Length: 398
Ligand code: KIV
Ligand code: ZN
Image (tube, rainbow, N blue to C red):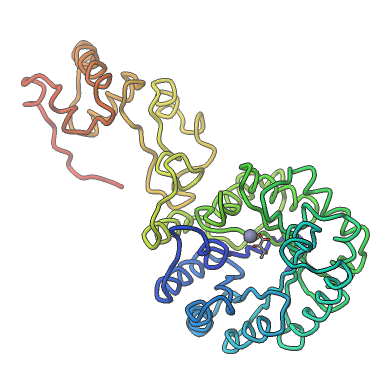
């Protein structure tokens, strides 16, 4: 792996699954894990072994059926959690134990009732125990972005000295901004030279409470992070996690800007999003970037005209790039004659200029009253003499 490669760590089955409406059975998790393998993710966080028997079973099942990606289990910084994670992962070809412990005073005082000194000791002991059970150990100082910077650095140093191979610095509550998050990565790298010297991977893990999860993750990459933690459709606690499809598309479309590669097969983005949408209780919102139903749909006349002239006018990537069959020129009250003519021709009707003008007025009047215009509505607008001239297509090419 080169410095130019960004590891995609997918946590749909852990952070994603633990949000409302997203729980999955073992069989459903397995279906999703196969889809993630086909998508090319490097690491699948399959669950939190200690959380429930179901989570343990799902992790163990996935380790035996899904071989290409590395499989991870989350564990609190507690002996029983770490041992349970190791047991769930025992059949994996390549396993990772992901240990986390809060580093912010807020979490230490109110949630864990632990002093800073106790937290440092617990961190060291837990990472050492995890390393005795797995070669690959990730440590996350939870709530890193709201932690005292000196203490965060101290905790990361302890984890590195105890043998952590990846350091993930989560923005647990989606509070940070891109500049601030990038600075945190730069500070930690600068103050702990062992990170770069020993090839320890730095990782981002961003929540979307302010809608900044993807921007923050990209800023972390700029500052040297070489792993991004993300989920399909951006599902996850509260407003969700950084969306995998947005990150993968951004790194590809703006390769000129970020200069890093990933192993994500972009044409599997939409199919994988569909698999998840069919397993949980909701699909991505229509305006979701990359995989939402409107991500490649155009309704306004000006945009449709531009799209018909040259798709580059209004699309920065082709729908096919991310596995979507085609662009949709949606006919609505904002559409123009060009799109109406285009759709009617696809339906087998070639109209003269005057005929088009006449049908266009009727179309706009209908579109003012109706939110969705279907093909049968269009045909219904045509006078009989045009309908009778219908040219049946010889063949339809997709
Ligand atoms: O958001 C978070 O801090 C987490 C950690 C457990 C990595 O999900
Ligand atoms: Zn999280």
